[in-house]
Length: 327
Ligand SMILES: Nc1ncnc2c1ncn2[C@@H]1O[C@H](COP(=O)(O)OP(=O)(O)OP(=O)(O)O)[C@@H](O)[C@H]1O
Ligand SMILES: [Mg+2]
Image (cartoon, rainbow, N blue to C red; front, top):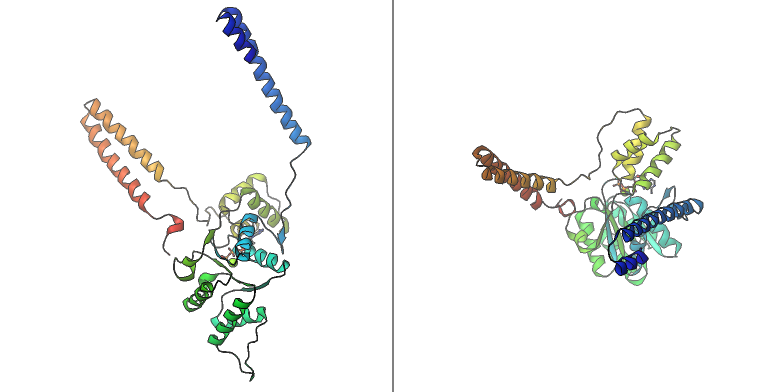
């Protein structure tokens, strides 16, 4: 092509140079097509190396980035809140974090919400903190709190609290106190309120799992139930899961039981605000046409409709986004 350009520059634009340009273009296109095909064939010959996804217990960990970020933050004495909808895989991720830290030789207490005293006893037990005084009497809640706080100040140990949104407010205020003394902690919660400890520490919002992961979870779940799902059935079920692993497993269960479920329970939907704004703009154009053609009915109709749609889009735009909603 460059050579043809030089020929044209020298000879000017005559029929001969046009033929040369056409031939050079054809050769260039053919060359690029051939190179693309051959590179595709090359890929088929040498498939890309598959990345080995580590597993926790029975589950594969698809959220490697979140796992690494969380452990790094905890090791830097930080605190982190992982927020996600029900069944988004928080507990599976928490167990992966706990296993990773324990494998590196750190002390970790992993607790789930029960009564405050029970939780404190559980933490003390996992950290090997004595829960009785020298006279053999059980420590009170306040003394347990002090003993755990003292332990966390003197040792490198991590606190992991699953379903933290279910803990009572007093317990969360105690966590806030611990955090003031830089105790590293990981909290996991569904729709955590923007108050007390939840507002004090950085949060990671769990994104929906990628399609390949949901598909894999469904294929495994179907395999466990010994049912064969066609690719078309899988894609239909995948739609219902909306990136949520619990809903993915549930959709296969429903298929297994032969239940006819149409809609999904996931909470991710398209934002139609831009669409409403576009319709509003369309009616503004209709109004202008009405004005230009002196059609009064069109002018009035376009004006009213444009005002309604523009107003509606403004109201929707001002609503808080899902992750900023006050619970
Ligand atoms: N990596 C994974 N591989 C396969 N299945 C998974 C994975 N992660 C989650 N699941 C499925 O999703 C279900 C819910 O996961 P998990 O309990 O971690 O979610 P959660 O966010 O803690 O839920 P909840 O809000 O109810 O506590 C699991 O029981 C499992 O069936
Ligand atoms: Mg959970």
